[in-house]
Each structure stands twice: as C-alpha cells, then as structure tokens.
Amino acid sequence: MKSLLLVGTGLIGGSFALAAKAAGIFDRVVGMDRDAAALAEAQRLGIVDEAARHPRTGFDAACIAVPLGGIAASVRECIDAAPALFDVGSVKRPVIDALAPLPAHFVPCHPIAGSERHGPGAARADLFDGQRVVLTPTAATDADAVAAVRGYWEAVGGQVEFDTAAGHDDRYALLSHLPHLVAFAFMDVVAAAGSPPGAGSGFRDFTRIAAGDVDVWHDILHANAPAVRRHLDRLIEHLRAFGEAAEEGGAPLRQRIAAARRRKLAVDGDR
Amino acid sequence: MKSLLLVGTGLIGGSFALAAKAAGIFDRVVGMDRDAAALAEAQRLGIVDEAARHPRTGFDAACIAVPLGGIAASVRECIDAAPALFDVGSVKRPVIDALAPLPAHFVPCHPIAGSERHGPGAARADLFDGQRVVLTPTAATDADAVAAVRGYWEAVGGQVEFDTAAGHDDRYALLSHLPHLVAFAFMDVVAAAGSPPGAGSGFRDFTRIAAGDVDVWHDILHANAPAVRRHLDRLIEHLRAFGEAAEEGGAPLRQRIAAARRRKLAVDGDR
Image: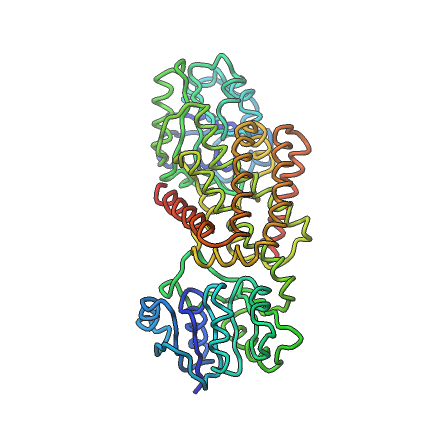
C-alpha cells in the first residue's frame, strides 16, 4: 500500500496523481489545496482519494504542485510527510535559494508539460507521456530520493534529464517564459490597436500561450525575471534588425527567413 | 462549361482550384506556374486539368496565386484572359499601386487561410471553409467582377468581407505579418543561445509560423514593411514595459497577465 501526498490539485499535480495511480505506483492519494472548490472537484474526479487540511506523516512521497510562489512554504510545511518530496515548478533557483539549506530529501523537478487549461478538470493521465522532466538536484540531495522521484516520472511516461538549477532557469527563460511574455505583450498591442477582427490560425497558435493561468505566470515571470529580461534584450535587438531587413528586402531578408525556418524545423525534429 | 485560369499552383491557388471544382463553379482548370515541377505535380494531383506556358483568352475567371512580388506582372500578363481576375496576396496596397491605374475587372482579394506547409501537395479543398476572405476593390472596380469573385469565394466556403486596401494592410501587419516577424526573430535568438534542447508544446505553437515559405514571407514582410515596423515599435514598448513589470511583480504584473489572457480569449471567441 503506497501513498502519495498531493499538495495542489491543478493541471500538473492532478495529472501526476492520475498517471501515477494508473501506473500502479501509488494506491492512495491524499490531496491538499488552499482552493477548497478545486480540492472538492479533484476528489469528485477521483484524482484524490481523501482531502486533508494539514499534512500528516507516513506517506511514501509528497508532490508539491502549487504555484511557484508557494512552493518553498509548502515544502517546509510537508517536510516530515515522506522520505521523498518533489515539486513541479517552472523555475528552480528561487525555490532552492528560498529553502537554503536545501532539505536532502527534496528533489527539485520541472515536467515540460502543460496547457493553457488549468484546474483539476484539465488533468489527464497521459499529460507526461513522452515529455521531458528536468530534475535539478544539488550535490547535497539524497541519492535514494532522487532515484525514487526519477522512477515516478519514468513510470508516468516522462523522459527524465538532469540539469543545474541555473542552467535550467536560463534555458526555460528562453524556451518558455519569454515566449509567454511576448504573447501576453502582443495581446496588449492588439488591444491598443482597437482589437481589430480577422485573426487567422497563425495568430491563434502564436498567442495560444497568452491564455495561461494568471497566478502561475505571475510567479514564473517574476521569479525568473533576470534571465527573462536578458533574453528579452536580445530578442529586441533581433526584432529591430529584422524590421530593418524587412524594409530593405532582397537577399539579406530572404536569408534571415530561410535561417529561421531551418532552425524551426530543426527544433521540431529535435523534440 | 466554365473555365478557370490558375496562375500559381501552390497551397492557396491549388486549394482554390480543388474547392472550386468540388463546388461545381468551374469545370476545367488550366494551370500556369513558373515552377515546372510544381505545375506537373498539380496536374498529377488533379488540381489542374491542363498545363499552359502562356495565358490564353476565353476563361471565365483568372486566379493569380503567385507570391506577392509577382502579382502585378502576372495580372498584366493575364489581363485579357477573363472578364474577372483576382489575386490572393496578403498585402493589397503595393499590388494596387503597382498596377495603377487599376484594371476595372481585377478584384484584389486576401483569403485568411494558410499553413506553414506549401506547394500543390499541401492544397486542400476545405482550406477556405468558414475562413474570412477580405476583398479590397476600389471605387473604379467593376461591380460585376466584384459580384462574380465574391460568389466564387462564398462557393468555396469563405466568409467575404470588404475593407480598404490601407485598412487591410494595417490590420494584417498586426494580426499576421508582425507575428511572423517575431517568430522568425525568436528563432534567431534561440540559435544565438546555442539552440538549447527542451522546447515544449507552447514553444512549438508559438513558433509554428516560423516554418512559413521563404519567398512568400520575404515578399509580404518587404511589401508591408512600413506598417509592420509601426506595429513593431509599439510591440517593443510593450515588451519593455512587461519586462519591467515582471521584475517588479505583484498586482501590476498580475493585472497585465489577466488583461492579456482576457483579450486572448475574446479574440478566440471572435473568430
């Protein structure tokens, strides 16, 4: 009889619980959520078997799936709940720094999976299937806890990889956080232009991530602001250069577009 | 026996020919394409019934579906082919200016449909189903030609609307051309950072349009560069402001994200 404490029953936490039960790695999930309605929905949907108000001890693992700003406090609150704790936050350094010294049985994790949908109702047992999960343990992290958590992610279909927290945060500032900031800012520009009708499918895909959860993205963009702004400054330089190339036209513009296209196809092939 | 001259047998032209034949508005399609391999493929795929090297007269309509930079020359070449000619270019002012005085039986059109795929092999009879088609005739455009061309687009499932060429070009600089420029430039920034692996589905959707056809996008970005750069300057202002808000965090950042999210959902509901 293996049991999981799930703190935060939204898209990511809910999907982990569903997938972990489907894979047979936990028999029982006890859920906590500061949002009582979400917790009740998670229970109704079979994501959690029992709702709790406070953490207990004796679990096999604890998954901390709250928005970034609440992770460190949740880890502290649940520190005695299980021999292995892990989070699912999109930025790793601020969590690790806030917890210093890092508890040895806490394994920082970031599954690269998500959706612009959120809440327990959006949870899916196949969310992590074939997706990357980045683990950023430190030299002080307990090897047994790392092995256990790695096993959980692999059991739910994830492809586990390891990185430093700083390396992870810089990489995802570029690959995820900045695209979100750009999509959000783009919607401002559209609104400032009077929200003209006529958007096509390209626009809809380009701005899909602008429908992300407000609390989640507030915490991510704020926590990783230095790295995001560093990449943003570079993006602005490239945007200006591309705008000038558009004005000029001819071979330089064509080469820029061809290079971008090649890189896009390479990234897609590299998934 | 109604016949269409199709100049340019790629995604848009090929899809129009397939859809128009399926709808029964043309019985025969004669195709021209400066790319002999594309023309042969279009014939093999049944998009065109006959391949031609030069335009003839006696068609019921001519669809000019070549990249933007070639439209004015193609219209001039085919001016006597049919009583109604129309193009499918994504920017309208430069075509109209290049043709001045505008032939009365030429109806400038822009179907808001596309894909990052291209060529005759990407053509689909349902490409225009439920999609906007913007027509930008001038006061001098022949009413019968406008009515005929409007009817063709409606027959293939399009939702026809009218705009001025300048209004259209400004609107699509914002809703389509600038997003493409941003997606292209973003791939530059990723490459400059060493193309780190780990992109998720959000990144893939955000940059989907960076896989667009090089010639098509060269011509569009160059032809509409003044409007694109005007919107780009505003985007850069909003990006900087968003970057500062990310650094600050708190209610102002939360409000910005919430507003962007609301606008995104409104645009999607407005399609």
